[in-house]
Image: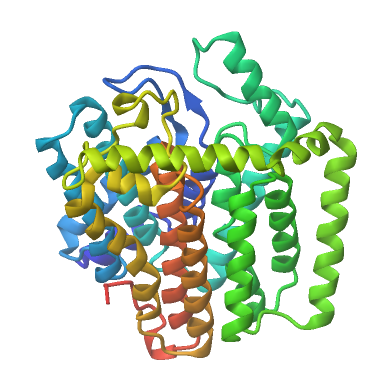
Length: 428
């Protein structure tokens, strides 16, 4: 019996399994039930654990371990390995263990995405991206329309002052009931604009342009300065390199008009956002962020070689009341010092390069490879102003998105290669 065929095609209906997984990842509703050191779990956690068991079972029976690109998988393992080693010196073992579990789950999200998408066609994966983005964006819209089941979820037991501050920001800037406030939502959506544009170029379907416009409108409505700046830099990189011809000028102007109308409508029907926009442009917030960076640098100077251990927040080792550094790179130095932090940072920065090195067989794969690499560059830029990669759910969703992108590259490889019509992702 061909066990690989049986497990890959019989037990798991490829399209149905992938669709269910994507829907559950797009709808990470949280349940506040204590499980060990964790105060809650989400629908996406259930999806990842279930799919991970399928991945392990397939690997054991078939003798094949689908990891996508071996080099990218190796780069993703570096923070997990160094984080595990930091248990030797961490100032908070429980917090470090929690972070390690979350990061292991993020890697599982990456692997299970590769596993579930490995035999799907390019068109099927692209459609799943549209479904994912529509669920994410319209879940946020339903929250503002106060539809039951889509109210903003915040941890129980918070003071009224903290809850009021949360809801003020939530209402003013386009946020998500389950993913979180605006910066979280913007970080997740920012992975897909260039991928959507490339899907349009490869397939010719105008539906990708409409989803692209919807995604850009949602990102702009978040008023997330770091994400918008990162997207702008990404666009400049594209224009400078001129490697990917995404769309013609007339269609580009049409997209700009649609996006402008959407953003104007958001501010028209949500006037509190306009007030909040003025506050976002205030230099006082920038000075506060710079002061926070300085506090982090001072803390790193006190433990320059090994840091304080993975997941240790700033308020545990300084007088600051803030937990987040708002800079993923500084946080790695805070966690691991110079000795552990530099390899982790090198692993992050190497991922776009490793994506570009994935072998491609046709122009469609080449176009998608460049789009995915640019999308990852945008995430790395976002890391400079947001702790995206350190947030529990965001880390999982970022690696899930990366898994989708890599799957698209390999699917594009199969798209116009008749002899390799069913080539799985066996690593490169």
